[in-house]
Length: 268
Image (cartoon, rainbow, N blue to C red):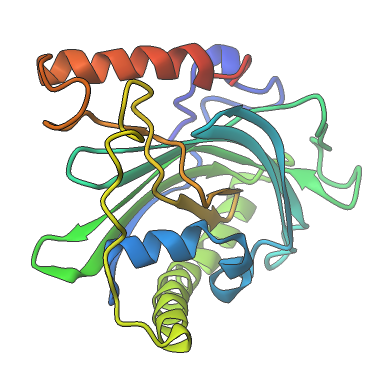
């Protein structure tokens, strides 16, 4: 599908009319939501489930629940190594679902090589994406994840080359990604000798006027890595929150106004 970002956010070297690969997939993990979120929010867990991230760094923290990140991936088939600068943001729905979104951006601290062959690493773009991590409605001891990812490998690759590379990756990598997460979180539970247990209920103080949760969040994808082990994402108002006397839509809009004020970087 074409690049759907605002025209002001699209790089001059990108062709908006070109259809770039878009992937939607989902899976179920054999562990409770809290344990999956804690595992994915732990930076040290990264290489237990994603071998396509060889280096990464936080470029700029925008707010407690959002940041700009830099990530590097290895050579994939005949496509040279790529690096990505990506804006990432997370929040929590009222039902406990973690929503993590991303969009490609640029940052002066991480300039990139835009044309294939002009450097060892070429700039790619995690154009837009979203991750939804939630409790399995049929089994509270399991977790569902849905991933939507839209990417541009960059470098001016011809359409045939891009299609060949993408077809080679999507046949294997999503399955490995989900399998490794499931194995990793279950192995961690076994190593710790703990029975799966839910994360303690977030305190009312943490869900006060700031509307932010202390629950861990994050994930490492091809195109971005973001970790919030101590939380910080906005949380949709609940009945026992400071917004209990407001209509739910109004309460959520108040939180979104705060998010808009301090979460959106210039040029993202």
